Amino acid sequence: MNPYDKAHELARALQASSEYRALLAAKEAIAADPDARKMVEDFLRKQMEREYEALAGKEDAAKTEALQRMYELLAMNSKAREFLAAYSRFQRTMADISKIIGESVAEGLDIFAKD
Image (cartoon, rainbow, N blue to C red; front, top):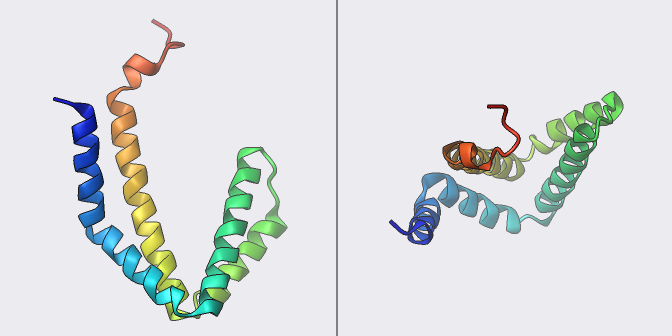
């Protein structure tokens, strides 16, 4: 079994998945609404910044609250809300697949494991 062939098979399966097709449809819908697209881009950018800060140990309740308020406003726009829902579902699918693959080879990659 060639892992590269399986990776290409997985790529095709992802492209054919309902999660990915829904994401593409939501992306097309949001592209037709520049205001909604900008709101989503700003939200995702700020969300990423907040996640990086949290990973660095910089907790900021005010920024977290501001991000929540931003989401609440964004959710009032149906196209933006639908895009974020589709984006989230596809991100979850990708995270699950990554976890499955990582766990399957974890033993070989854990050089620092205590025997």
